[in-house]
Every structure is written in C-alpha cells, then in structure tokens.
Amino acid sequence: MAASVPGGPEQGGAILWRSLAVTVRGKELLHRHNGCALAGRLLGVLGPSGSGKSTLLAALSGLPPSRAQICGEVVDGCGVANVGVAQGTVALLRQEDAFFSELTVRETLQFAASLDGNDEDSEEIDALLRRVGLLAVADRRVGDSNGSSGGVGTGGLTAGERRRLAVACAIVGEGCSTDPERLSGPELSPRGQRRARALIADEPTTGLDSFQAGRVVGLLRELAISRCCAAVATLHQPRASIWRSLDDVMIVAPGGYVVFCGSTLDVLPYFSGLGHCCPREGVNPAEFLIDLVSIDVEDPVRTADDQMRISSLAASFQANMEASCKDDQVLSPSTVGGSTTHCNARSGVGTWRALMLLGHRSGTQMLRDRATHGVRLLASAGLAGFFGAHFGKLDKGGMPTARSVASRICLLSFGVIGMAMLAFGRALDRFARERSLVWQERAARRYTGPVYLVAKAVTELPLDALFAGLFAGIVHKLCGLHADLAMVVGANALVAVVFSSLGLAMGAAAPQLEQALAVGIPVTVVHMLTGIIDPAGETTTLPCLPMRFLRSLSPIRYAIEALCVAELRGLNLAWSA
Image (cartoon, rainbow, N blue to C red; front, side):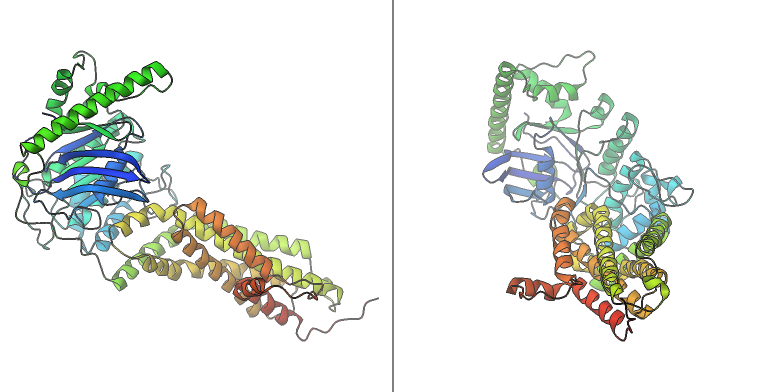
C-alpha cells in the first residue's frame, strides 16, 4: 500500500505529517496528504518542476513561503510537534550555497558551530571534515560560487565541495561525534545536545555533474543512517545510481498533488497495479515516475489526457491514504518506533557572544579581501583625480574671487553626493552577497537582525570612512580648498558612514536586492535634492511643509552646509572686473 509506512529502525528521528496542505490566497500549492520520513532512511521527493517539492520542504522546515497558510500537523517520531529549523530539530540545505568567500573551510565550520552554541575543538572539526571528504581542503578558502577566491594564489572550492561543506555546516552544531561506530542510537552527546532529527535538502544535486551528485546523495544517506535521523531531498531527474541510493520516495505531480509516498521497493508494483507498468530493461525508474506525472502543455489533447491520468493517480493515493489511516498504519509513533526522549531545542548564543562572533567573521572576511580593497583604493583616488582635473586649482592658487564661490559650492556638493552614493551602493552589494547565509542563520534563531547590523557596522563602516576621507583629502590638495583639511575629510567620511548604514538597513528590510534598490535609490535622490544648495541663492518662495521636513532629515544637507560655511567663512575675496 502506498500510504503505509515502511519499516524503520527504532529511533525517534522521524518526521511525520497528517493532512498537510499549503495554500496562498486561496490557491493550493500543495494538496492535503499524509506522509513520513523515517529515521535512518533517505526519502527522495520527485516530480516535475513547479509541482510543489520545495513547498513541501518549506512546510516541513517550518519556513513556509510568504503569505502561505499551512494546514495539517507535522510531528516527530515521538508525536511531539517541535519540528522545524527554529526548534533546532531540522537542518535545512537550500538550493544555493552561501558562504563567506575569504574564510577557510575549517573557519567556516568553526563559526557555524560557535554561532550554534557549540565551540567544537579542532579534533571534532577534523573528524567532521574527514566525514564529508573535505579534510584535504580544510585550510583552503571557500571562494565564490564560480570557484574563484579573493586570496592571492588560491582557488576556491568546487561545486561539489561547496555542497558537502553546506552539509557539514548543517550538522556541525549538533555537538556529537561523527564516528559512525559511535552513532548507533539517540544517546546524548557529552555536551547534552542531540543530533538534528532531520536533514532536509532542496535540490542538493543542482549544478553538479553526475559523479558529484552521486557523492552528495550518498553522503546524505550515510548521515541519515549514522546519525539515526531522517533525510529528505528533492531531486531533479536523478540518474539510476542515485535512485538506488533512495530508501523511500514521494511523487509530487503538477498542482501539488501527491500520488505516492512509500518505499522504493513498493512504488513500481503500486503503479503497476494501477495499470502503469515500468519497462524493466534500460529504463531508470526515476525517469519513468517523473514522466508518469508530467504534463505536455504544447498539445491540448495530450494535456487533457495527462491531467486526467494525474487526477486518477491522486484519487487512488487519497483513497489508499484514507484506508491506511483507518487501519492506523500512518502517523503512529509506534509504527515507526518512537523514543521517549526528545531533541533539545537549539540553544544558540547570547547577544554579546553573537555580536563578537559576527564581528570577528565580518572582520576576517573584510581584511582578507585585498583585491576589493585595491579596487576601492584606485576608485577613490581616481575619482578624486577626476574632480581635480575638472575643477582645477581654484582661482589658480591665487586670491579667491567672487566668481569662484559657485565653483567651490559645486565642488563640495558633488563630492558629498558622490561619497553618499558610493557608500550606499557598496553597502547594498555587501548585504546582497550575504543575504542567503544571514537568512539561514536567522531562521535558525542564531542571532537577531539588529545584532547582525551592529556587527557589520562596527567592522565595515570604518573602512568606508577611510576611503571617503582619502577622496576628500586628495580633492582638498588638488583643488586648494580654503576649509580646514580635517573638516573636509571628516564631513565626507561621516556622510559615507551614514549612507552605508542606510544601505545596510534597507538591504535588511527589503525581501530582495531589487526591491532594496527600487526603494533605496529614490530615497538617496530625495536626500540629494533636499540637501543641495543653489549657488544663486535662496528662492523667495518658501518650500512646502513636507519639503521642509525632508530637508531636516537629509544628511547631505547638513554635510554640504557645514562644508560651505567652513569654506566661505573668513574668505577674503579679490576684486574682479
């Protein structure tokens, strides 16, 4: 029977769900169904693109899509509803791997463990690295997703190595041994913490060649067995060797209809009983199953046939599921072997400890990124040189004239605006690179958003101020400004700090980088327009109340006014014809 639970080891590391459904604004992304992922077994979720596989994993992880409503019940193997990333009972691997490119593999794991409240020693880190096959590259920098690294003369990790590092990061904070001979039951680790009850991976083989994909899936199954927990992975067109690695399978059809959930040994006989036989010779069962629930949208006649077939399969599974529920074969802790002990929720670290760890990690990443610093140095000096070439030596270094007042105001205004725009864009770019990783760590309740922003500000804003000050100092020298050098440097540096902070805040508040840019750029333009000074003087018409309010909020206004006062105060002007 498709809805029956295959036998599994007597562990409490299972995930079971009853009548689970996900809807968004009345539309069902995932239709009501029952299912389970057993301890010590790998469950593969198969189906065409857009069928609802990722939605299922999000629901099991306690991280549903925006504005989604989850119906039904999700419990562990002991019948306790404490399943989720935030509860520390689920380790989630998203489709994209997010790391700090300048950190080494070993440092990445150490920071992940520390943020999870477990300061793993070097032996434990090495044991985990050996477990996932990364010990040989433990001291290599992770690099970007394209395999490059900011480190001089070093290359980053390959796609397969990055995926295995993501698996290691997901389980490093569990505080237990990675020796397979010691992972034979749900006993407590020496630190009193337990292993994650489930390892959930969304498309873990995406972007990998067939060999690396097989290694990752094999690693997931090995960890499920050795850690006595369930492993769930959505897979896109798995090859035959990967299919053989699966213990159980769930088939999801377009529209979010589940048509099977059970052992891989039962799936082909089940569909054969419904009149859909898989050829035994030369056919990958995974491909047959995906084709069985796919819809040909180009041919209207075949589309109707495919939809009718899927509806029939879904109805058969629903009837099978209801019969199994009546027989008490599904979602019973006794069926899967529940344990009377439970996973402790992830403890995490305190605010100050998280602040120190995040600051250390951000500072390490920043200091090692020499290539970016070199580019920023050249950009700041080059932009200052362009200002000097455009405006030249004011009054040719001689006695200031009335005609140069407008040039001085224009130079100071454009300099402040340029530093504000550069700092704002740089902050958004930095946050965009880290957004996915920060989202994962915050979902696991390792720290709060304000703690992350403060740590970023403390470690990175001084560098923004330094480059803005460098620009201002060069411009002051090349153009011969009258204002004190410290005043010019300080004002530009302060503007860079303010707008870098604004960029970090907007990046954190907006769901996507595109939305942050869509809102942030107009906000910056408003600050610019309300902050500039008209060299011709004030107009006779007073601005309206909203404009006066916006002017009072503009950091650009205060910086330009302070610089203009410093520049023009005590300036002796020569007579001009």
